[in-house]
Image (cartoon, rainbow, N blue to C red):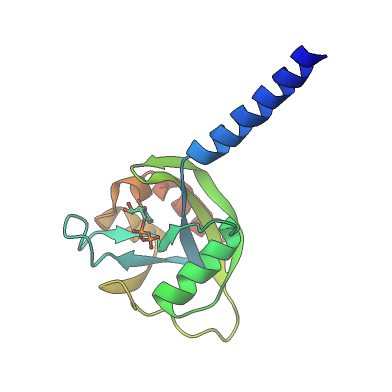
Length: 151
Ligand code: CDP
């Protein structure tokens, strides 16, 4: 009995430790409207300034990924979006793991504007490859093009 209790205790501790060291999640938003996706040009840090990304950021403790998508789009773009499921696979990044979520603008929401970025623009599928994307986001371009063309 003592052995079984110890084993159960060890398993619980291992589970907790795994959760503690699990890679932080960063969400990125593929905001799609009329067959185009919103790309945002980074203004910081210097090494990434000028490169394009899908807007997003770190998921906060206790926050769902969908809630993080809504919050980041409100903070960074001043608009309201409705998350609509994952796009593509988990992408390893320095900060942890990047997960792209599809989203659509809520009807009547303000036009997205670059509150923290240098610029934002709506991009057509055939223009996707022309932008200088940050490395991780480049890996999702195939899935993104397929998504836009399926609309
Ligand atoms: O807003 P917050 O500081 O939470 O996040 P961030 O600095 O915009 O992004 C956190 C990390 O994820 C940075 O290292 C970004 O380069 C990376 N990231 C990315 O690779 N692709 C994105 N679409 C968004 C963030």
